[in-house]
Image (cartoon, rainbow, N blue to C red; front, side):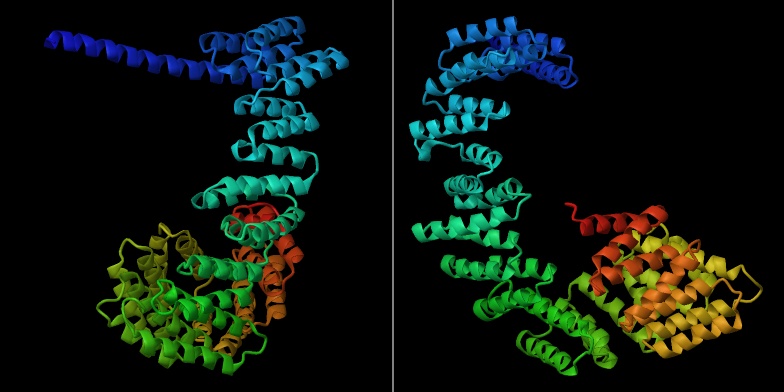
Length: 612
């Protein structure tokens, strides 16, 4: 073949390919246009477009169905009847057309004739999956669920359950007929036909199908127990049973099932760890701890989940200990021993650095052993192999603890190091903000405000918002009179609070109120005193002061902060969701421009029970 002939042949193939692409595109465009006509009630235009498309694509049966639907909407019964009879004659095995013709007769008040055609639609239905599906779906769309069920049951009998892939269709019909036991039975049948590798998708689908009625899960649990007894080697059923327990929020039972599956399948503990994390997030701390213990004790040090389980266990034990009304020193000592045993076993290295950082935070913030915390962090940041992110966060924590101990120079040095090492990152922004706060505590307001102004453009929304608040706060309180003494006293009080010297901080705040009763710091003083009471778990007193701020000073910049804090106390500390919901609603309605408005609306919707 000559080069000219090859080029000519290639051109023909290319022309044919492009023609197919163009035609396909035009078909899709016309189909969308027809659908748009139908949705907007322009049935004449929709009918004309569907008919045109069907004549061009006679194998696309849905186009004919849509065309007939348009004619029925237009009440052109004679025309629709003629078209349907033509289809029935040409394709007698497509008995879904019998059902549609029956609907046509019913719309003309010919109920007896309609029922005959409905009956023929089922009785003459062939053993073809596509037709069975169409007949059942057509009845379902018409709201004739008993007939849809009859069609599916006959199809199941003709095809056999193993070759009948419409379990979800039947389950949906049973759901509409309010037969939950049969609905669940067919959903489980569907799951049984899936491969174990697809079980995740199956669970996602079942979560959607079963949404809205908690009794479904109880029915499912009962049926799964029966299936497990009948088919003990089928792994799908215990998988689904575990999922059912999670959906019922029975994490204890879910963990029991997960451990059994982990042993049976000789897994690495991943499913057990997942249950532990779910339970922890839903405040089932007992189950979470049992999951972590399983990883630690049964999977052992060789498990890739060992470090995470150990760290999570100790952190959760700390949270439990600090949540008690009366902190028990023996509990904190036990946690301390746990960390020491871990360090003796695993050492301080690149693999354990984040747990060592967690230990230092525990020492400083829960055990109030600042000297030991600083020693642990000093050793940690000296490691050459430590992860950069962990080193930066450790330096920031070390600077914080130096500051709490009153060593300002050491603090600013470390903040500056982190700033320089992370010029474009979040940790650099955190360090810059903390350095600016340090100068604020020292009374260097002009320099501090300059840094806050720069941080207004921080990539972190939280840092940006805090920087804006501090800049506005300094500006408002520096321009009120000729002296900056009240602001310096306030900054000093805040510094005392940072150092956990709460009594001294409160006394200094009271002194400002007494000495400068007309100063506009009054709402800020109330807010900071509320913060101190919150830190000491005096929630009733904290609520009293926060409420006074957003009630008596509702035009001031602390009002929305105080409202958010009060709502969080009701939700998270006092377990009063109704009062929390009331305050969240007030926040996003009365302070719609607040940086907390979006979060307040989200929490309100969650407490109301919305699916957020």
